[in-house]
Amino acid sequence: MSVLIHHGILGQRWGVRRYQNEDGSLTSAGVRHQKALEKKDERWAKRNSEKITSNAKKKSSKELSKYAKELMRDSNATTKSGQLTSKTIMAYNQKMASLMNEKVSGMQSPSGRTVQFVAKRGQIGVFMALADQGYNMSQLKNGIYNSGKVAYKNTVIDKVET
Image 1 (cartoon, rainbow, N blue to C red):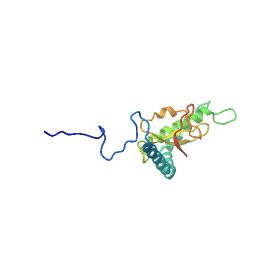
Image 2: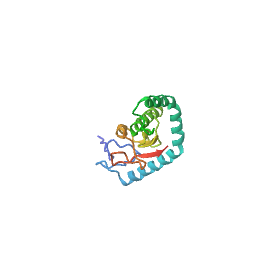
Image 3: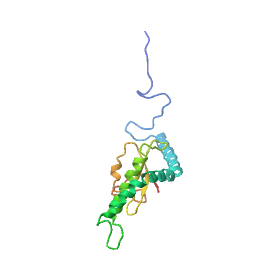
Image 4: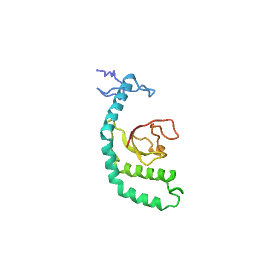
């Protein structure tokens, strides 16, 4: 009679490294691996952000200009001095971000993070952000500051300014 003895970890595949402890914290190898992935994403974003952003803007420009005209028809869109209100700017930025996100849906960085556009606060424009799979982007609906800090929260996401 022969006995089969297994000396590995259940579910572990040969050649696959474990980067997490049982409690979910990263091992030292996991920390190094995470930093390497972040550097790779950073280089990728620097190389490709302008191209990705310009293509997404180009593809969504018609819809965005229609939306801008609708916004300007609203009597509350500008102040008495003719400047845009912060509410109008935020609405425009959120629309721009949602249209551009439709155009880049499914695009991923080398580490598997998804490319997302997030509305800027206080000025017209969007940020290109790299978010983990399954990240709730609606948490960012109020925009992020120039430092990358999410508005009203204490977390920071990786971003590339456009």
